[in-house]
Length: 481
Image 1: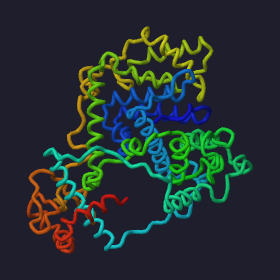
Image 2 (image 1 turned 90 degrees about the vertical axis):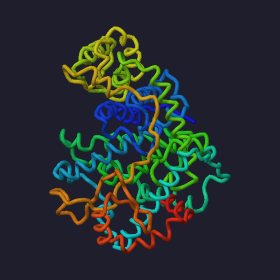
Image 3 (image 1 turned 90 degrees about the horizontal axis):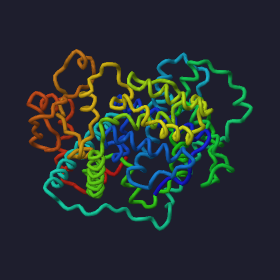
Image 4 (image 1 turned 120 degrees about the horizontal axis):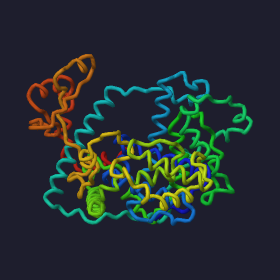
């Protein structure tokens, strides 16, 4: 299981931009741990940066081997895709809030602006479903803690790649991004020039658009029947769902070879209450825990605090086209840039020279090691002991992977922030008692219990009491999206 080929051109430029973006995301603990890739996201920050650097080198540098087909490297590749999705979503949201930056350029589908509020019955059904899933998840977690044997994780290979329903679903998805044909060259050429603010506002979409346009029948090595240069949108598209579909085809379906259904299922998919409520998912949870603990233990034993930022520097050296650095890394950045200039490499030209820049990094990293004990974004006079404390990797993962502590189901006490809202939440987690009748919801005290009864629990309590013992039904609920 591994990527099938190297990335080049606009696709390489996009991938390098995401890896470079991850330096700052990891530094700030912001959007750096996608829940849908649990192995990657539960590793330490320093370990994740090392893996991103390894994958960047393998995908971008022509003389290096492709990334190893290990569970941690494949998880990292999938995490990079998810981090790109998050960057796209944030970009669209920010531009939507600003309103006046490139607004005349945006393309919306009609469905984007529609909103269908849930009915009271739908809201009630969701509350019941969530309460039943959380209750059953807690029961199954207790059994796991007592050492219940759930067996080995294994997903059966399908004899046929797709059933009729799968094929119809895939056809519908493809229809959404291909129907109507590609944006014509004439239309693209007629788009007005962008100012600097607009270039920044559309940055990720322009990078993604260029990567999709590179996927022509001549350049694509897999499933050429669907070249992504023919999608029915361009960088002006404000519908994230279309970007997700097209980029998944480009970077996952066409690029990744998973090897087996078990490997793919282990790597991708959030771990949550639903995972614990569905007994068929418990072997995966235990397998994930074993993998995470082993990876963390091995990495922690080799971590050197004197080289804390070495992998941030590796990513920067290969992927960045910007001249910047925190206080303790300015000397290194200047020295690295000077060697690039001396060797005729334009450091600020995107999409090129990945191997040459890696070679320069390797040639100079020991000569310019000063400051590497500080993370890349550290300011002057940062407390080094505090920096190391925040970055030091742990030797084992969480005891209850993906299981968030349950909270009181009541509304809590009103405050100046929540009093104007039509709904409130109590975030209490200590000394909770279950409802004496349904046993499915928890309360921190009588005040919250009475308040929740009045606001709707009285309508569902009997239903919860009846359904909470139906393990098969709850397991099926947990399987639903």
